[in-house]
Image (cartoon, rainbow, N blue to C red):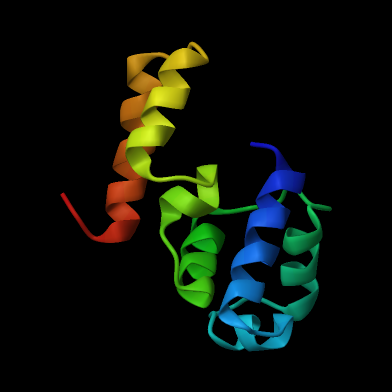
Length: 103
C-alpha cells in the first residue's frame, strides 16, 4: 500500500464531508488525534485492521475506498493485472467482507 496515497484519500474524504481532523477522531474509538494526523499525512505505516475499520466509521466510507481508492471489482481487476495470486485476492476479499458484515 502506498501510505502517501492512503493519506491523501483520507484527507480528501474528510474534506468532502466538511469535517475537521478532530471531528473525524471523535467518531472513532481508541484513535488519538496524533495517530489520525500521522495517517492523513502518510507519515506512518502502523495500521491494524481495527484502525482501518475505525477509519471506515469515522469517514463514512467503504473499506474498498480506504484500501484502494476504488470499488471492490476495480480492486480485484487491478490486483490481477499486477500479478497478485488468487489466494491473496481471496484473503483481501474475506477481510473486506468481514468488516462490512457480509458473508
